Picture 1: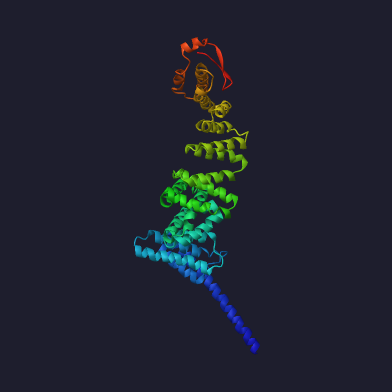
Picture 2 (picture 1 turned 180 degrees about the vertical axis):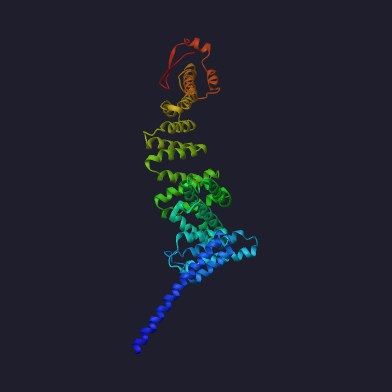
Length: 435
């Protein structure tokens, strides 16, 4: 008899639970339906009240039953009211309520979507509630889905990282602003043709750049200090990470017009040595040109030479050689400069031949056993100037100045030289015509 009573009691409990579940399901559907109607009419306060009632009866974590809409629309209702509210105190209350909704779902539901966490992060930043947590949540989301995060999330993430740095003074946020700047730009590039985000890409990009360039990297000394610190961490970085850092650092230094800082030279030199053979010559050329602009012709010449020798079939050989010609001329290596200049073709040939002419003129007083021999070098120099002009170079007043140094009529008569005679210039192993 006792056993039978126990079974009856268990049955009644089970039946009662079943009935209660049925009632809860009906109440859940009722309040969901009522709330949905209020949403359609944009009566968000009433909609929120109905969704709060729905929470009493619905398993709002049950996505299969469609109950997850309760949290989604409850959040949406309060966020909309928050946006529309003009009173600061009331808006603060609504913001706190929105946070409560986000946290409640995270607490109640074993699995919360990445989109929910990202939306939470966005709100925390937009409402200026917690920039550190906003940066954390949005950063995790962007790292996971990349450009699919959308341009607005990317911008809010960058803003949140900036304010996290302002509030905490933790340099990790400053470093993040530098490194993520390029990553976010890459993701924005992928959104250029996106039907939703495409039209906002450049505005977002400009906003991100303004934060970095105007608020973080404000002067060249500060930039140098930051980058020097990162260079000091190279031992712990992979080759790919080093290349990535160098490219970003050089771009920043260029944009902020800080190329005169020593760190630019240091990073550029490191970067070149990290490049694959196929890109090495162009990197060496860039470094050489930088050093040439600083009048450091010896090192510039060495790197132009590296650019020339690394890829002898490179289509830019003439460009590299032209750079070396300029440096050798500045260093006074006139014979080598003359020889290399003659080998240059294409668009650089004119300027190269102009340097060849100048090499001849620079050494004229030391080339030849007699005065007339030495002056005759200017005939050859003018020959090269004319070739240079024919190849497109601007020779300015050089030709006229060289012609003033030709042998005089008296010197030609005394040495039995006549106009049209062919003379060999001993220093150069080339012939020229007497004028």
